[in-house]
Length: 235
Image (cartoon, rainbow, N blue to C red; front, side):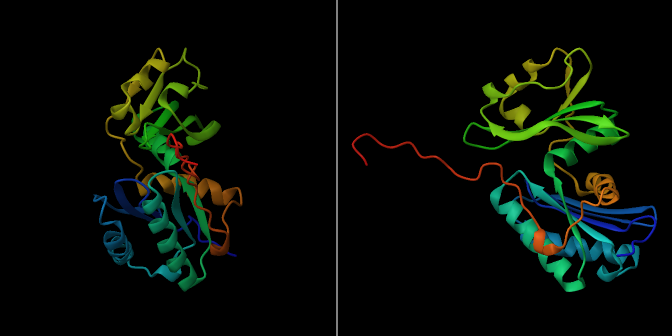
């Protein structure tokens, strides 16, 4: 497949309370974002239409669709992946999954000068989705693994002797997370992923050949099952 230069990327995310779309065309960026947790399925496609119209191109002119693959809300992830599937199938476009945690880290790096980023999203059930990243050539690079766990079980893999910036709703829900690092600054402006931050990650991913066909679209839930405690006297 021959791509445009620079790459034309459509990015979509509905994995958290925020819904966003971004389009990069010929060095220009067109974006939409809304905090509308119960309206993702109604908001996303109109956002896509708006950025395409603003850029004066059609979906068929896109090189790749970047989609928020999770972790996050189960419903939000399903909405994002299903809409990506529909758009990509219609024009036979490749796709690339972007971690919601990496997108947040990328925003902290690009807009707030972070060199190390500790991301945490409230996963409900007294758990958090966490990921720790360092900036390598301006790209959020995962250290260790993304995971879902109790806040008390989070272990810091970043260099606590250096400045660490934190972002995500997990720090509001569980303030004790900030005690993991001696120098930690919570970036209040980065609560949720934003599709515009996914563009750089998608461009890097495509340069590494990480794009796939839509048949290999792969959501990441982290919490695949819910374990229920057996009630006394019940089998």
